[in-house]
Image 1: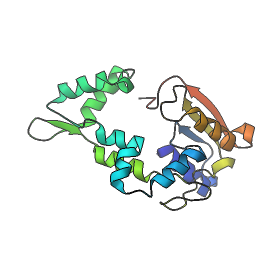
Image 2: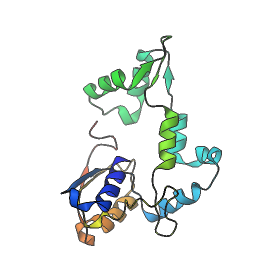
Image 3: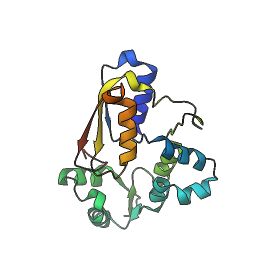
Amino acid sequence: AGGALMCCAASKAPDIFEKVIIVDSPMFNPMKRAMFAFGSLLPDMIIDKVHPLVKGALAKKHTWKNKKEAEEYYRSRRLYQKFPEETIQSFLEHGLKEDGGGEVGLEFSHLSEACMYKTTPFETPVLGSKNGYMGQYDATAQKGVFLTSKRHDFLDKRDVEFLKDRFGREGGGGFTFEQFEEGHFWPL
């Protein structure tokens, strides 16, 4: 969500930014944002079951008997298998906390992660945003680089094409677009 918020800031105060670098930010095509907007009108207990990011965060394992078990879990997950060893070790050291009885859990609660996904701005031209108008899609005159993953495990091809049309130089915007081979959590 940091890249989306950076675009909000750049649209509100373009004179303080020379260039902006956005890395695979959750900025989706209008159809996907409309689905999120309509979905946000549902009660939380339904959103928890149907929103893919919220559902994933809530279903994610978040406690282990010890650090060794947590390490084995993360090493078995496809998303983390290409992480450099140094990153895995840093995550195990700083991303987990002991509960006092020997068990470990995530430093950043899975409930907080789900809440973040529920409240990420998803503005649509017609519906606006339940979080108030943020302006994340207004920074079209801003110069910068938008990096997206070739794997499309977060933004899909329609999202990237929409962003290129909205922010890219071909569409009259100030951003160049570059792709990287790694997944969404690059450069971790």
